[in-house]
Length: 264
Image 1: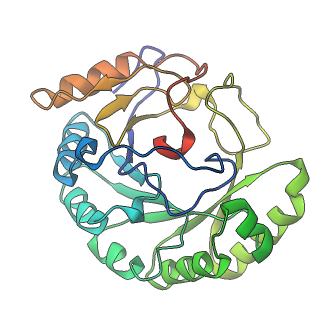
Image 2: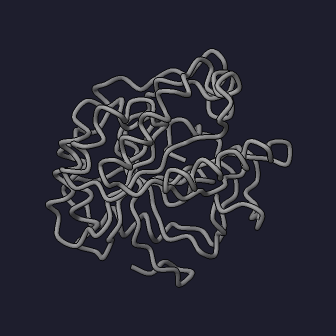
């Protein structure tokens, strides 16, 4: 599908839950955030219906996000549902990695194509501070389990000019473990969107190729904005078309969503 700016939109990011088992400093306030009641969260079957409709419109890539997607019960079954959809060439997942080790082999077997793992530092103390209690060893075990299962792994590093030593350590680790690395600029959704060529993500607005499905059943055309289209399950393709039509040439700012609940 082409949007009004002539960009090909073929990538659906799916927030399967707003919940996360960590409280990263750049993602959540210290006290955490109020979570959406379970009865307002889309079922796995409805998520798969939206993905199937998107594939019928030419979408060929889905990425499962959160919150923390592995905190959602049944997410491995969802991978199987997505793998059965004709036209979906890539099923990715973005995770903090702490729950990945026991599930990596099953996820690969069910059809997961690749996994992105958040890893900002290899210093255990700093990792615990950044995640407010997370254990570096859990994430490293998850990364190694994913590689052992044959999954391509990309390490997401939220970095800054003050964290170059951490980035160099992660790059060295990635080379040893056979992983890729991508840098992410720390950002806030309620601040004006701008492109920064020093980082690989967020991607430039001119290259945007995605829309997002929130766990609550709304389609978002842009991360940096408040527009959203509730999915009409009597006309899912129409909802997707309406969402793509709303994509702005460039993001602005969002008042209603946190990064933690929208899948980054």
